[in-house]
Length: 133
Image (tube, rainbow, N blue to C red; front, side):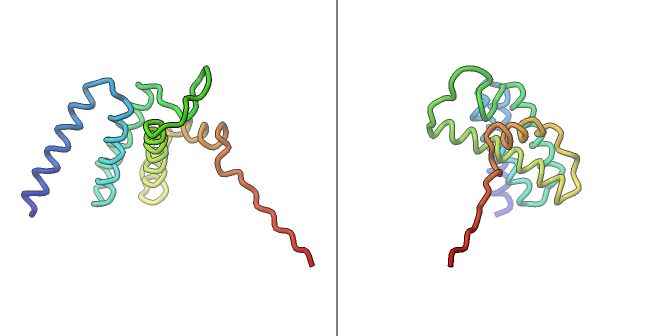
C-alpha cells in the first residue's frame, strides 16, 4: 500500500510540475490548493507552507482576484465558483498555518483577505432579535 501511495503521489507531483510551467493560473491554483490540503492532512506543515506560498505567488502572477479591477463582474459560472473557492482556500491555509501551527504571518494573503472581507462585505452580517410579547 505504501508503494501504491508513493507512486500516486509521484504522479500527482509530476502533473503539478507541468501545470506550474504553463499559464493556466486557475487550474494550477486549484491543483495547488488540493496539494496544500493533502500535506496539511498528513501533518507535513512545512511542505504545506511551501505550497501556500506557491499559491500566493501564482495568485499574484495571474492577477487572480475576487472582484475584477475594472469592468463588470463576470457572470457566475462553475469555473468562477471553483476559482473563488481556491482563493478562499489559500486564505484559509495561510491563516490555519499561522494561527494553529505557529507558521509565519500570512502577509501574502493579506490583500486578498482584505478584498474578500471589505469589498465583498463578507462577515458583516448582523442578526437582530426582537421579542414581542
